[in-house]
Image (cartoon, helix red, strand yellow):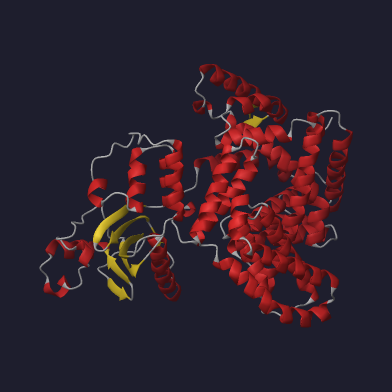
Amino acid sequence: MLDLLSASFEFDGWLHDKRQYEGRHRQGWLSAITDFTNSALQVGPGLKAALNPELSRVLDVANGLRADIQSKGPAVLKTVLPGRLPADLAAYAAFKAIWTEPAVRGAAWKDFVEACRDEAVSYDGIALRRDLFWRLMRTAGYDSQRLGQLLSGVLADINWYVTDAQLWLGDITDEQFAQPRPIDQAAGLTERRRLALCHRMVTQHPKPAHRVIWLAFDRAGPGTSYHELGAVTLWHSELLQAVLKEGRNPSWESRIPRELLPAQVTVVPPDLPCSRDITLARVDLGQGAFTDPVRIAAEQAESVVALAGFHADELRWRRLDGYLDFTDGRPYKFGSFGAPDRLDDMVPPMHTQFMAAELDRLSPQLTRHLPMADPGLTEVVQAVRWWQQARTQTPLAALLLDVRALEVIASRVGATWERYIDDCLRITWIRLSVHGALTGTVYEAIHQAESLSSEEHRQRLEAHRAAIMSFVRGGFTVNPRNCLGALPELAALFPVHTQLGRQLRTLDTRLISLTSLNAWCEELADEWERLDQRLRRLRNAISHGGPFQDDGVASASLLGKRLAAWSLSLALEGILEGKTIEAAHDEHVRREAAWWSGRHAATSVPEAIFGS
């Protein structure tokens, strides 16, 4: 589910769409409006009060647009929309302007805290408030990773983080902060004082200062380069170290950054990494009140590198983790430099095992079709390659490749891809959402024995693990029925105020009776409608020049990946079993329909989920 800000950005894109309204745009408009109005229903009471009356006004705008689009024809709307949009845009701009206000951030934080305290709130409800809180913090320019560490440390009453927060807020001086601080020492704050300190952090506005950030890129190749590009200066790491050590070279003395002069600080590895393959980027942000200076600096440095790489046809440079942050010429914060994990650097060993197991499974069937003479099989295999290539692409490119795979299979059963996914994959998505939540959550729980403080509880967990997991050729398998049987006790074993404990409680509540299970399935059916419409909207927007945002694309890309995988698997295994793609789909649709209707005739939850 999209949070309020993510859905707002999508709605904003349609409000600013410069294309003249046409009938084909109707689905996209209605989908964006539905995502926005539904996300507003999930906002906590404190944040809703802080956002009003602007939120109420923009909801009126959305509902008015929905009514016009549903009641008026395309020809009429071509004249209606241009007339009403200026007022609509003004209402939206007023709503957007208050997102970064301290009172809004504070209200989102309080709603999140209250949801965590309330044991009756589901894990999904907490996750929505958490995601919206962090979205607001990032929109205000805060470093969510850094702030998340501080908030967690303060809530855990760790003195190291408490003093760090107090320095940030100006409660203590640099000299007090520099005093020895054991990492495991408790601060001794009451819960009330910890929460008050956290609230001040999320509503604090940073003090103005002159900020300089140092970053590093590897894969930059050898050399002794030095480039001044406005606020960004690139130094080859070996050149900088040599200049700092010599110090007396008149030709370089004026270029040594003020913050690295010996009177300020001595910089030697590993403070700044030094290698024949590393180039350093100094980003001078100037004077300002920066909530997340490292992110701003990284965006500037990476933009320079990307532009140069585009023109030079060289895209190998990558930014290393880590930074040095100087405030008014003095060292302020640092993050250790180190190479980030990259998929193109290594192939996980487990991947080769999974691939080998899958080849073993398919080998007997596939051998009968080699060399491939069946055009249908060849076409499906090509679509599988697209699906595999999508896994290495950005969400935007992956979505297009996944939909292309869906289009291929849909054409073989005589349907458009939009009609195909609704007719053939809607119930599958609902059923596997239930199965996946059950097996995935329980699987995680039976591997978390170290989270339990009681030896008796750990022994019970091990007994459930032995009953749920069994070894098969190529790895382990999970018994879903035994997962369901273990769920009530697992929900009782794990504390409710942990993420896993809340997930188990929520799942147990949803599967405790036929009534609750059927209610969950209906909720999933409603969620499918929004996801289905979002996938269509974003795919069409990407293909035809319409509005879209990265967060919306990411959410739709995940759905596209799953649907394409199920579709290709169904087609491929149908062919390998000697069936046509259409026949395989007909059988699949009948099975899924029988499951959907069978829930209402079932006499127990296991029968409703797994069938008789």
